Image (tube, rainbow, N blue to C red; front, side):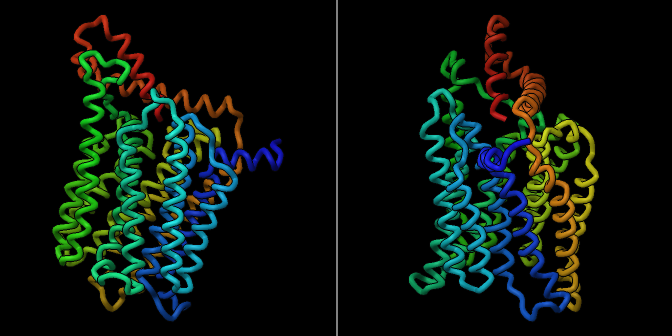
Length: 446
């Protein structure tokens, strides 16, 4: 039986144990805003409050929990400290507290502090990594996300305080809400999804640089992702000159290109139910991004295809994989989990209700309240499912066994899907064992 000190140490090793439950609480606060108003429990509503809490507290908690857990493991460097965990949690709670009282600049300043702390956390880990332990190409989107989030916050504060032109408000809000999270999804999702779904096709490894192709392909892909990131950042400035439709169309092209580049769009080769939900969430992000400029009059509703069908479904499916894997129950991922069926159905109902709400103006807020209830039902069921498992600590042997099984399964799918690429790159059967060895190293990134 682990002591309190040991349990606290494990929370530092696996920060998701703190931030995934915190994310659900924040999500219910942000979504429950509409339910309370529909029931008459509150006399006013604020779409700004709802979007701020959902993006800067709910989704940010999931992002922090996932990155603080995965980045140190990827770089084989020290895990988060107690002070870092306390700082992140305090900033998220203060964001909600200040937003609840309408102190928007203070709330956004806390989010800016969170972004800076997250950037410093990542920099400290990756600056100490071994030169041979290169971060995934897709992770270039993480600094792009932090930059867009920080600039979006600064634009909002300057515009609201009257310290800059008013168009900064039109630029800052979408850059903060959409640019930050979409970049995280393209980076982390673009790395994780093809690997766990068995669609990852590796480049020639840098250690296998016959003809020097590995480094060239890596640099080419980095430049391409940086170009897409620059285009996304630039698109938000179209909002300032009332070219919002052009901005959304540009972002739809960027999102689609990035997901197709990473092969995240392809059907999962594994049959696990949570992987199919992850695949659906990726396509909801793609389709929702195109629906916004195509049905621009209903852009707010179309955005919720991205937010509910995309981001929310993605966090629940990936979160399930993380929680069960660390709780020693990875075998349950092979079967359709009733809780995930419930989450998927409830989110689908919430999405449909949110999209059709403007077509029934007399019942608009009642429909929003019902959509809110459906989302909260999904969140509560998932919260109940993970809560005990968050506090379940397994032996190192059990946890390593789960990772070895995941690596082996990924390697099998990778070898099958990339056979013709390996054959072409090897220029002969005598080099095949060397390339298979490099594939094993790439599979260990998961």
